[in-house]
Image (cartoon, rainbow, N blue to C red):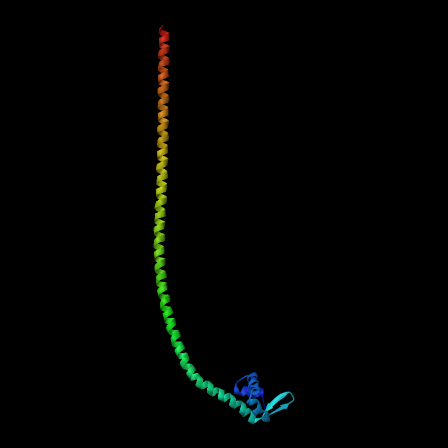
Length: 171
């Protein structure tokens, strides 16, 4: 006589799996004459053990036969997945090439923008220098004109005053 735990260990399944099997019909009814209770432990004799093993061996045969058809399905699925992976890899490679191309184009545009910005800054500086020179020139011209007018005014008045002075002294 063996316990469910011993049988489960020999078959390679859990105790719970065996408990679930022996609760279901027809195994439950077929197994009654081959079981006894010793304290709180269910004991199964050799004939009951053979019944339990036969249930699991039938399942294994079913699994083996379904496994071969499942393997064919798995092989086809693997082949399909591999094709999809290849397609995605090709698409990914193409997208990476496009990305590299876009990055290069962007770098070229950025370089061109930098060059144009430098030229604009240089033109702005030159424009400011020319404007400053023009302002300085205009200021000098205005200053020279003002000085010249003042000199003419001063000289004219001095002559007049001197002449007047001379006239007055002659009389």
